[in-house]
Length: 167
Image: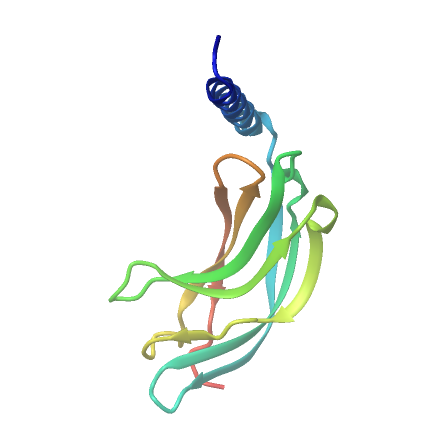
């Protein structure tokens, strides 16, 4: 006969293997979901473009952000983290990213929204590279599943520019 320890080990091993298999199937099933999020961001006002006392440029914007991220939610989605970033090029760096606003979306009911807000985080360039600069606003999102791999994607909205003079 098998001892109690041997039977407990066999039961635990079988249970963990079955749980891992179920989690793998659950994660794989997300590949078949139809994700088609949409977003639009408008700059309502450039509140301030100034040179700080130690030489860096700082911008304050009023943004109108509307997004429909409901298609990102499946039965396996725990939450979605979304953020808006300003992206631009300089002679020193091929890509500069500055996070302007973010939100944690806990469920599908809150995934369709429209908000008018000033940038939550300061839009500062290390130097004086923002005057007259063209930039993109990009909505990034990270889908955090209950089980499986975290997914990330973005929508790039090009064609924004800052004024040539401080204001």
